[in-house]
Image 1 (cartoon, rainbow, N blue to C red):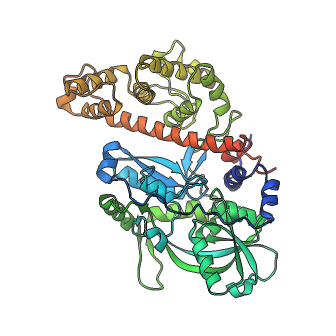
Image 2 (image 1 turned 90 degrees about the vertical axis):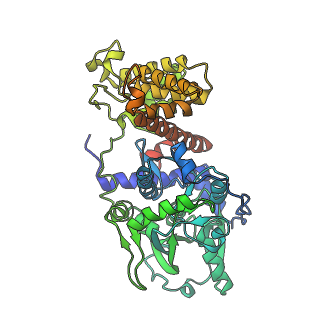
Image 3 (image 1 turned 180 degrees about the vertical axis):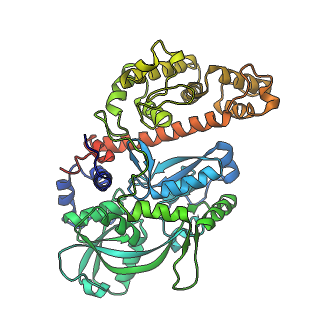
Length: 508
């Protein structure tokens, strides 16, 4: 089969993500349109309810090894393609996490959830979702230094008529936005200035991208978008134009809790390397890394998937190119299929021909010495998955006396490092009077096994413990994300599952 061009791959993927969002808030596009023919009653769920933030600064986050990113599921912030994670906000934030020895757990903002409440309650540690600093938000949370400046523009359907240049040229118009967006406050200001604007408040499930698609389809008369999001949408979405600018040079930053000075300092140091404001009327200075990300996600449709990604296979599904193969195998063996998909993503990035320097092969990176099958046989993708799940289930059974969370983490660690190193780490934990059945204790011991004073007395010697701990964290974090995406799909009867991969019921 010939490869799909980069342009069409991006178009399918981005339209699929938008269709996924639209599918969540309505059973079909026709039903969505019918619902929007009348003005949606204003939503009253924009109140902040958690005003006292939990105490968790950078030192506590580093002890846990995971930093939780609150963001939106769309093509500019965070999305999955063939089971791997992408998005401007995710890539930019992930680099900060790597520099600080942390793995990232993504927490998606869902309908009815306020990101400020999610942050202050401790559900996440940072908001990164093209989040503009506003006076209302600053009442409840703090912000880092900015990493972008954006203009808000009215987005209109392209009727090949003169595009209004000023707000006054718009005349009476209904503009659809989310109440919690910064756009809502801008529109309220225009109303107070006397412009004949009606605000249609839509569900929080609609992100800016989905609203622009609604304008294109005629579902909405108009919406508002930051100019960078509009520019990204125009690389694949015809039928929309940018009207008047209603707010200039809004500052985009990361939202953090007010009691996290160490985290703020570390983030500001990172952001200062990549974005500097200059004088009035002068463009900001951006690092090469930040310019590459901006180019990749907002400007050039030919670049976004220039990285190594696997084309969808005949087994493609909601989360990966191999859902339809993995799911029945895992189900038949009583193992959570989403966890198996997460392991395959970590082990091979869904490359069925992958081979490591240790000789592990296939999707699940099975070592032939731990299987009755030969290396050549294990390159059969179905057999490889069956063997990987069999080995995993053996480890789950071995740790069956533990609570489910520790059971899974010990099983994953053993899958990665082997039973010998995990036994050594548990012995070391006991020597230090800590519970060897608690994963956090054993994770600390695994990292100590990288030091000679500890590994010299261990039966299996030196262990790259930090890699194993990171391996467990990343798989568990990805699994949580897969659970969220699967739940969103179930909300719509799973009819939009393929669109997450951009394969396209969205095109029908």
